[in-house]
Length: 160
Image (cartoon, rainbow, N blue to C red; front, side):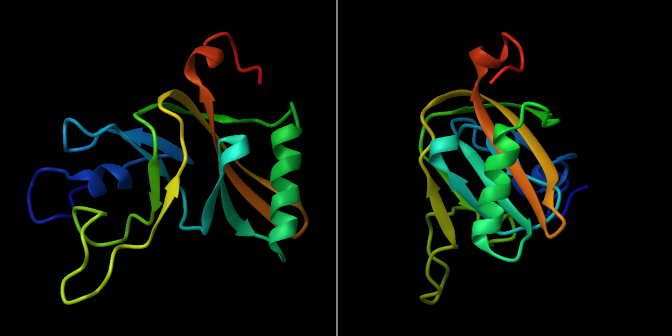
């Protein structure tokens, strides 16, 4: 699927092609590391640096319910994670909505429109195995998690 004005898929087109809860795509700029795409459905998301996990708010009455559900899922060895690829990053990343306009997230919109909405993500440089899950925490809470594990640790098996 090509959404842009050309016949060549761009970064947005590649992000839309991610099938599953998350995925890694190559960027059109060769010197730029690949992008981690939080796929599936639009959802408010944040990064929990101490867990190297993106938390996606699918359904919850309160933020505290969502965080409690996330911690329970992360602690449960029976959690059925989906493997989503390997992401290599040179460090600091940016969490932003793919629907934000513009080719450069650091460039201001014209006519004083400000910068695209984005949040810095303190990811250490390295190779990360990406795994994801979307699950029910309780009858009122659904949580989506995308976790980064050191790639060499994952190669020894899925143990955490």
